[in-house]
Image 1 (cartoon, rainbow, N blue to C red):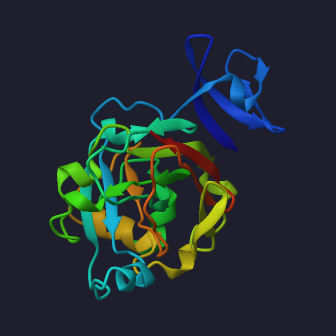
Image 2 (cartoon, rainbow, N blue to C red):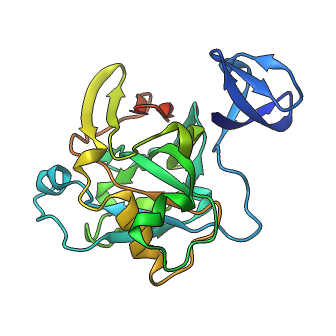
Length: 248
């Protein structure tokens, strides 16, 4: 099932996809363009941990002239960086290079501590798409992107749906793609991750507790290009949907 969070007529509601429309929690069936889309993950009772992988595809590491990492390169993101489907993301006027990153995102479903790889999927609620924009001008080190690169308000669109784990038999067998103004600029596959989803859950939970609603952004393949105000960027992952964002 595909779950969404939207605002309709001033009210925030849960929704599910039904035959190309949205079935709202109040029982009404509305068109996709009749709502304002929010990130599809529910608010959490405690601060949400957002873990994001860098250089988790060998081709992307090569694209940036780095060797593939031997253990996960990870940084934390603040929740205010999240944005919704069909929303706008601001490109600072002084930057020379700002690019998208199409990423499979894992949503944790229950408390995970010292999880074994073979049990990892039991702790997943579902999956969604992230577009984790980066601003290269502010980058001090690819291994440690600073706050202005990855934690700007609204620079990580998420959605459009949270897709139940059971509807994604193998998250390591999904095609990814990005288009900018309708032109394909990125094409990849989750099978090419250096560190796969079970490994990441085992790895993170070995030294920290993951809670329901926590997110793991699993990195992007090669093919990133500079995007300008007015560009419409669509990051799409097989079975999960197409996340639309416009730069302003």
